[in-house]
Length: 193
Image (cartoon, rainbow, N blue to C red; front, side, top):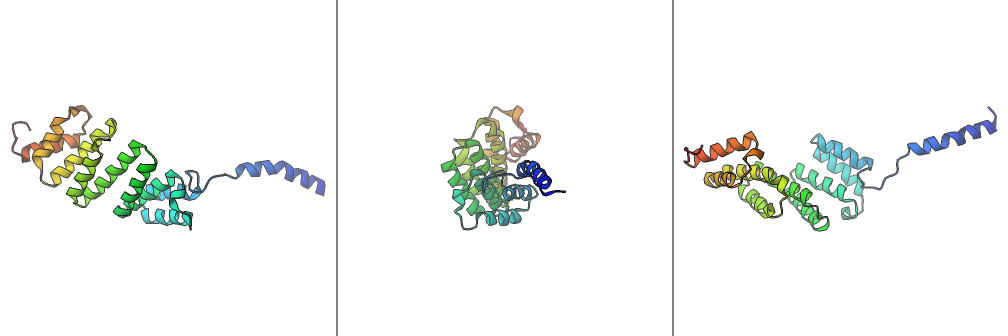
């Protein structure tokens, strides 16, 4: 093949090769390392995800990267049982990105973490702190978790009252209704159970 033909073929192929290259901003949701960390997070490999996200940062301040990166980092801190670091990041994100639903979901995850480790007082405080700002569609999830915290702490009357006070029986899961029956029986209100 002559040199001219080779150059012509290469010139024709260049746009195809250039189109295959993705452009992304480091730390953005399109960043391959962030996407890989998302995959690791979905598979509950939080330490590996933290390592991947840490390599992305290097010497850069993590607060300078995208909000998606910071949420992913905070979620993986929590997944790897680094509660204090996750909570600090969630608070920082709430102050900068006023997405009430994401912040409420993060606080529910923190409260679930505390509940699973039998830190009932801390879980109750976390849940009470977010109740006023909680989006209405997240109320059943909040109510379910708060009931489990109260039941775990032995506060059966409060748990029953919480479930009976809200007029959302149709939104409650069968598990939540079961918890209501347990709370009523344990608090001595067998006629209502």
